[in-house]
Image 1: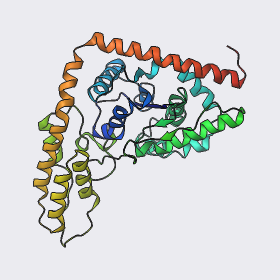
Image 2 (image 1 turned 45 degrees about the vertical axis):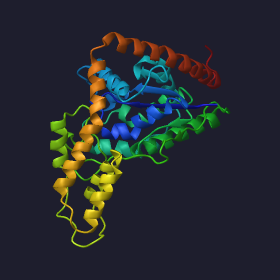
Image 3 (image 1 turned 90 degrees about the vertical axis):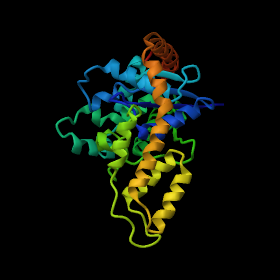
Length: 331
């Protein structure tokens, strides 16, 4: 029996390398080995962007980039989160059994409170229960997540187990974190700290749509130090980050070359960053070509979303009907 996989990305801007290596590359690999549900999390986006300028355009942009990275609507179900009212209903039921203390202790909630103290809304607090509803509505067994989402997945498991225990059922399985490589991936930001993402600033994040000129400029500004002072010394975080990016581009030979130069105190960071920038440009080129092809085909994009909605709702309706029955509601 195939695993059921579910995951999504918020439509709050262009996807970046952190998205790609943290989730999308795994999405693509999973299509042939699992029943996959990949959604564009337009409800989630409202927790930090409650008044989006053009929500559909943003969602469409993410869909194009999903497809450009290799997702296939014939092999996976790709849909808009807002096209599933069943998700919202399950979110409500899970909120009834989620406790204030456990939601307030969520690391990402505390981070967002610090980052946006004027927008600490209920949706932000209950982000973990909405994420749990997204996963449990399809009774997913595996969830591809980055390291920043591991705690949310643990909370999903908690909510599923609590529901089963309270209502004396085995309706929900406990989903597991999943990475085709075996380890959850974290792509570092160019500023030397944290993971790559919009929260670290645009100059520290390489987006899938960045032009070669923009990529080169960003990489050349990546944080470094004054260089090693003795052979084989430990690399500081900002330098280790550059090696992580080289390996993520599949350039193990380049990483080994510059590692040798570092260990013998001969490394020139400018040369390393030029090399890395060209690796990134080469990596992004086929993705950007595909984006350009897809953006002009509005009819095809609409058909993909309609097809995904139909398939996702078929799965979601079965789950919510059983949830209502277990709780005591009658359809």
